Length: 124
Picture 1 (cartoon, one colour):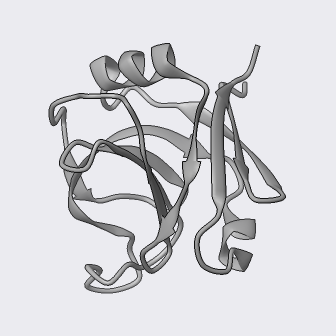
Picture 2: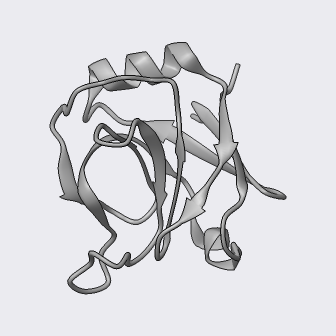
């Protein structure tokens, strides 16, 4: 089952919600579609959103393919590999994030060069 469609430049990816941060997930779902010009930080893209949510089961280390909300910056983040904060090959946020969803196949994100326009929308 696909819950989200994520457009990163010319790429289209499918994702599924997780139950890690249900209150944050509901706030983000109510605000969809969300779109912005993303900045790249290692193998992470992030962009500002109008969503405001407190930390909820927040953690810094996440799995590749994670879509998360960054409470400190009110941003959505897409992780697929190491960031400057990583201690190895794991994705690691600058500060704890609320995990929202997992991208089914995140391998195409490695081809993203610099920032990109990102749009996250619900799948009807």
